[in-house]
Length: 298
Image (cartoon, rainbow, N blue to C red; front, side, top):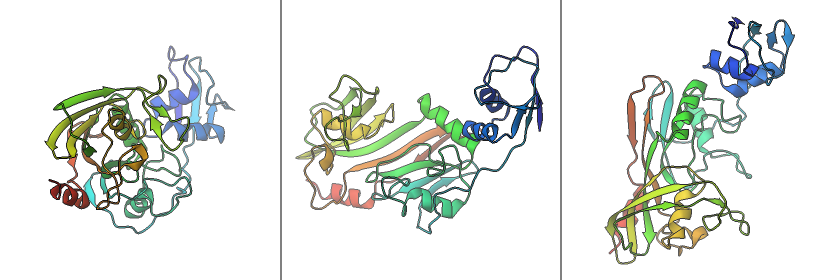
């Protein structure tokens, strides 16, 4: 493959230019090609950050990505939606999304790799296809990108807040108001490093909106929408206003004898198809154990 840069198109980095010209490939893969000597500028190997003046001849020899290091495992999956670009999985509580922190088997990534073989490589060898995440004990719908172009498109939709996510949560205590908005930065807890906190002035901006669907004697059942996707965001924000998610002992809730998880479910997600641009809305019914717990409340 050979690319001739037209006059007046200089001033950009080599890797940025190639990403614009070859949108079907991820920037990380293009950068690897450059580092491996598979890209030549006027016959010479350059760095990914090399600045282009305009008029150079770029020669590219695309290579296949290295095999994914995540291990495919034959684990049952409930597929809510699939097309050539995207797969939506109904993730059960207790399943880790991808390997890490000593967890290498039984992950969602391993299961999806076995079922669909080829996923996007943008997230790296350990996180193929992963555009966003759910906590281990959060159930519900999660999107997986099947190719790099779809991954970048979805990532852009998440970044620009075009993706709409709706959660269902049961929280401790009876909410006084019918709806509310929480806008507090979230940062790593400096004392308990496994937690996040909304009590510091520093951190990444985060927006959570909630609406009461039903009140019980000691709980409130909420619909929750998030404008950002920070780690533990819903759990941290709701705990910060005195209403931790039921069963979420990490953030101050009492343990629930009838429930071996916390009550948070990713109910729906809406986005634009990376290929057609048409709207797609995917819904995951409340997990059976959560529905049963809710039915048993007075």
